Length: 602
Image 1 (cartoon, helix red, strand yellow):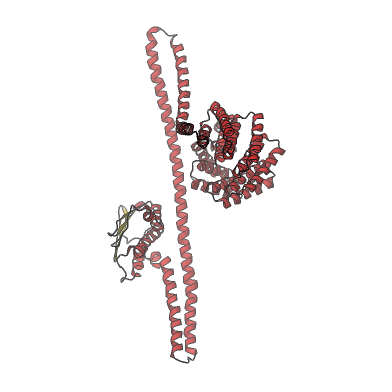
Image 2 (cartoon, one colour; image 1 turned 45 degrees about the vertical axis):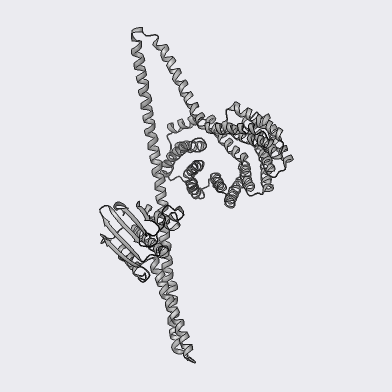
């Protein structure tokens, strides 16, 4: 896990260096100076992709700007690529559900285009997401899809990437030999291209896998070969990682002295580079090493340094930013003092005060404009997220209702009619068959009654899934018809409705009907109540509904009961209507469910 974590950290570090070296400012200038759609959307897509491993909010900002253009032009290719970039940003933010949403939108767009390379990248990102959530079979499915495309395109770099990525999945599955086969395949491709960076990665992965297998001699060979390559390339950062990997392997092998030295070597490079994440990880492992050696005092010191360094990571970044701003300010002040010395002594104070006020006003104005723009972007992004969530919720509810209607229709028109036909045929046969005695005739009558009862049950289930009263007469009538079917000997149900003479929006009626139906079913199944009161009132403020029983109630502080599937289903449906739902209950005192839906959403 340590090796994979450091690999991901290194990936982000390299991406940042690459993005800066390749000129983010140049891309921004290209965007602002571009005239044609293709030039603008291309620059925005590249900016979004570069920022996915640098600044997630910036990535989402450029993604949204790009999507505004590509959607307007109905450009499926760029829309698919931009949605993938949005998914990557949400992935690194830890919002995996949003990431998956954007990834699948990207796939649906790119699968119908000739942008195979872009589709392969999206498959790779989906595979990473499943790998993150440990759905390893799904991860391999998408890695295989990506690999098929790269093989069709004869893209050796893409093939090498997928071999390494999928190898990690096999490590998670404990299939280390298979993982090593993948890493060796990547090594072969990198060697053929004389790609020293790729060779180093493959050797590092192989060495790490052999460490997991406790084959320390092989692990040592590959890790040392990796170190030699990285020494020749003078790549200090990856060399520090390799020293750390080797130290970890030697610690596992019980070679404590050698392990200690390699961690020291790694720390020397990390200290020079001012790379606190690697220092922090190394200190944690060195503390473990010293504990094994019996040096408990030194182990404690390393643990303390590890936690201090870990806690200081944020402040280090802030300190660096403050130092840069301070340097810029001091330079400006020196230049200002040199200019002020050229003026007459009598005007010196005037210029100092005026310059200071002007400088402060510029800072305030700049900050104000920056914050205003930032808030606008955040508001637009949040609005789009809410719109997508509403759209997804509506689609789920509509699909659920359509499925209910389909099942109800199939039961009524299919099974119901067949059962009715069976009853008619049995009744006809009854009149034609000569029975030997009354027992045979009674048996036939029981069979006909069973078929008749089955017909009634099918009609009742069909009606319960999609009542005609809801379609024809409205919410109040449908609920009254529903409670009339309840056996009053089991529980006495009272219904009061007011202000519902006019029909509501069909979607609102359906959702409220399902919510009240769920509440009533919960009371019958779990409350042990003798009486149930239902109230439906529509006024200027909206629609209010209460469902109150005198049952055994429950403890609302019990998260397992409050967050049960039934109550969560009720909350989700009411929230879809932008309404609120409150549960008031305690053991032995019954339960009150209070629902309110605003009128403008009704």
